[in-house]
Image 1 (cartoon, rainbow, N blue to C red):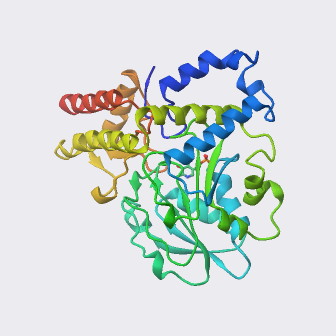
Image 2: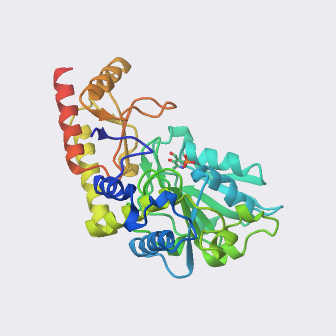
Image 3: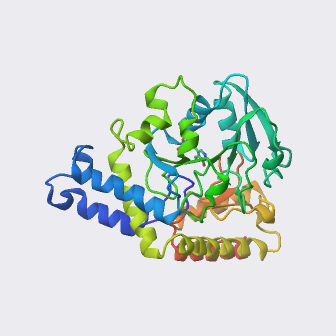
Length: 358
Ligand code: PLP
């Protein structure tokens, strides 16, 4: 298998793929694969509810929150949050820390007024905006932020304390990588394809009282409350993707839970950042040190020619997905949960060797 540093979809733990392969043809003697089962069958339901329960356990989600499995990716959440929670005459407030926050704001603008609360665009999103949510504009219906900026490689070290306004967080690229303080969050969402399994299922974790405060004119298919009331079985869920998420949560539990995952993430990130910092300026990180992401490590080489050569040789050496996002260029190593420590070690060795010979 390749050294997979893709930004998403990213790698899935080998143990999970092997288990899925073993069970693919005949899941627990059912005579069918999971994705061939009725979503109303008790066998599928046992997977569905176990996945929900294990996410709750891993992230210590309080009972006052619902966990949902939806479809449409994180991108549909940009619209769905606005459709549910942005009433006429109010604004949705956005903290802009990268392209995904910009996209979230743009989508929300189709449903009502939006406003920028803070932004680090002027420094090419190298840092996280400084913002005090306790002092935010009173006509905001909610405040939206992105916890990890996949493209620029920055991350909130700790999420800001909430003021009086509900807080919605796009956790697409760092969910299940560190503990979460739910006190300061009303709704979090993430596509599964980076840290939680495969594309197709979107995880939403939301305070029930917030879901109940939604606007009245929301069609059932877009209503969080509807999905919550039906345990995410209002319509056919992405059963195969939920199954993979269930196996990923088993894997996280086997690793030792969220603390163990966080320590592993810190270890992998520090290996790469040390390689960058010890290169005497050959590799330069895009993110300011204080904002460095534990999930996406973005860096440049001395010239675009060298970057091209680096990416080509890395590819030949079995590395996948090291190119930076097309909007920013350079290089990016995404080191989601499923990336083994040994793959990061191999990348650090490759980087040092490349510097030495070039
Ligand atoms: N938000 C963030 C932070 C992302 O990294 C991505 C995808 O990479 C998205 C949203 C969009 O997610 P999706 O493709 O699941 O709609």
